[in-house]
Length: 258
View 1 (cartoon, one colour):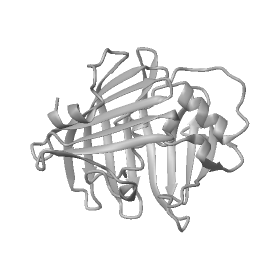
View 2 (tube, one colour):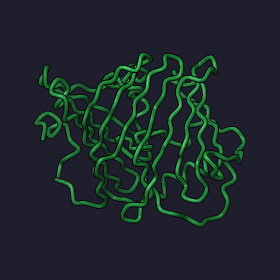
View 3 (spheres, helix red, strand yellow):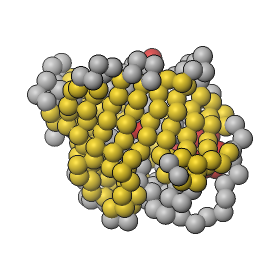
View 4 (tube, one colour):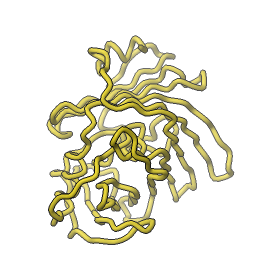
């Protein structure tokens, strides 16, 4: 799964404990390991986001992301806090069975209603960022076609290099290539290729720190190299295994804006 806000994540950072297990033999095994080692039951992240266009012009935003994992179920709620023009815009993803059953909902204060995000919107930008709705949704690792697993280095770290080809009827990407650090089982670089197999976007996880026992990328960047536009996210504050309000991940809560 590419929950790239797993690279901060984003908007749902994927924070993983150090492991010492048998060497995986396939890309699917690596990505299953990545999922299994996300041992935090809940996560609350306060994030600063900066959008940077090809001329260097910037837009700043603040958001908070709530996430929980219960068995095979993963839910996330992203809520924009600043500036005023985007305050209250919220995005909810609920899923079960490792991403096989999922639904996405968007709430916009201007409309004062919740709408389900259709699969046809998967390729669309999420609120002007370099993330698509597809990027922010979990994916079943068993529904990806994996090329033979490779080893390589990235930023001086030994990595598994996992290349996958989506098997969706209407794929968003031609292929996705991930560099997963072997020592902490954390994706630190992801390349996304378009349907013509040309490099489209590059995501990176930086300033990785161990917080409350979890490896946490404190900064991440998604760079659309074809239009030279970036989304840079910095984690201002993160809390793990905090008790979250009941029914937080619901359409009712989404519409109330609480």
